[in-house]
Length: 280
Length: 121
Ligand SMILES: C[S@@+](CC[C@H](N)C(=O)[O-])C[C@H]1O[C@@H](n2cnc3c(N)ncnc32)[C@H](O)[C@@H]1O
Ligand SMILES: [Mg+2]
Image (cartoon, rainbow over all chains, first blue to last red; front, side, top):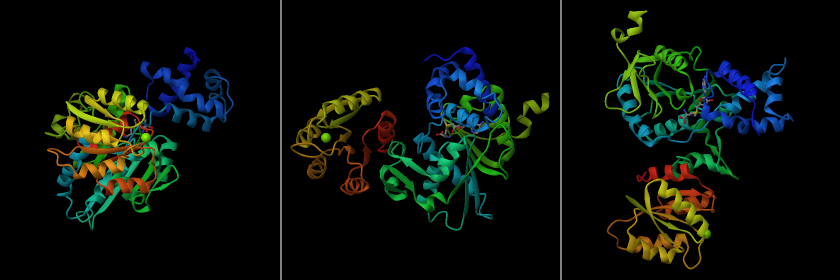
């Protein structure tokens, strides 16, 4: 079934208004496919009708569902093995400056269903003795209510659990109940989740490490800048930002600079490098 | 190029797995059961074996045990790939020396991520 240009425009603008994302050409064909379950569930005959319904009063929750369905929530455990193998070193370097407080605050922005932040939690627990006496504050945020609820629940399908997760970790950290894999409570307790839009004020506090991976690529340039700018304001002066493998800050935000020798990692640039501050 | 030996009694599964592996830049060899696979590990020296559990003649677990008794220049990594999806099977396989475990059905990302875990990705 083809989706009409006017319905597509209406749905795109709802998505953009809510999330700051723009449906690029490549994603348009998926719209109809992504919305099919909603049409079926609410007995709506077409995307056109859905677009009209969304303009009616009282359509809040239908809007939420529609936006959720249009978001790409693709994720997996230890996504990008190289990135995860450099993290312990980076975390050690930051922790070296935290001996007095013994506290680390880590934020996964755009955490989807939780695999990224739970991967990090497992990594910390692998090294249990090292982190004894430390307070590890792991936060996952996402704009999708559904994704956040799933992260909190920490129950994964067979398909999800084996994407990226070593079998040993499956055995150690999850319990199989039927076809579903439930995270153990002590893993779940290490992480908390909240709904948040990365284009709006960030969660409270300063973070030592921010992961924002495979999120910015869906945004137009101005919104990449906006999100990065917010993150630069809550990153500790000696902290690090990690983006996805194909993403960069370059050209979007001059408050960050490349962390030498590390892939996809950035640190705060000294203020004299903030060209915009001088030019503005 | 890395080489993967695909061991499965189902021709369809072998075909699918080989196709995925080729897109991941592996060369492939095939075997239909554990005993063919034992010969193939010696003649083909694969870097990794993708191993079904239930097969006629010699099953995956018997193969894994026999593999342990071979003297090979380089022991291949072993990734089980089976419809035996219970946690007790996974534990049994890992305890018997398997490096990784894939529950069928699987897709490209799953196989790719498991290959990375055994450091062949
Ligand atoms: C492709 S997933 C990436 C998940 C994970 N970080 C990873 O790399 O595997 C992108 C996530 O960003 C979320 N997202 C999109 N727009 C957002 C926004 N404005 N604020 C917060 N999260 C957003 C989506 O809901 C989705 O879960
Ligand atoms: Mg079989």
